[in-house]
Image (tube, rainbow, N blue to C red; front, top):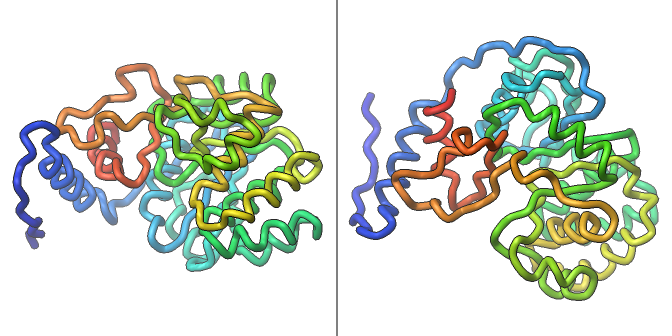
Length: 295
């Protein structure tokens, strides 16, 4: 069966339509493929966490497979469900993972957070899906060191050395991006440096202490709840905590740049020494193109 794709005019400067169509073709070729089992390695000293629902399950599948194939240590794995998938869905999709997989529902996440923090999180969780990501990371930070990786991140080489180095150096850290996607009111009040590039991106989050014990957290949650329409509350909170209480992950851990979003000849992160790349929504077509090149 041949799948047809919509015709569109070519942008001579950015090759926008061709780049997007190539991404659609790559996604079609990748979808439903059988993934080889990942070989188990010695246990990593941190938990790997990600989040997905029915709309992003294929991304999660490819992201975790790429991490598992390249990582020299195998972390315990916890998946935060957005409520649209249950444990059996994730177990079936992630059957290649070499160790047990824990799945947490939104109700389980919220129940495990201290009441005082939970009450402040409720409005943020109701306002935007990323509020649950914020809640999940807070909840799991009480169990020990964790590394959160978004489902739209592809891994090209072993990240363990850089991660272990960052766990030794920081209590909390996120990646830096050249854009400025933050709640500007929140960032302006607590960490004005995030208003100028490079700014914070929460595609990768390293946590090495119990966030519920962080005195600043309650104030940030309360301030964020005064602007619930802002979709970057979660990212800004992690960015502020990293700027004031921790630091930022090594540049070569994950490329978070979008200059080539609509070019046919996009950046090849593996050739430039990056362990991973974050493919946010408007560069998502490059995720599948790079996956075909690097599978």
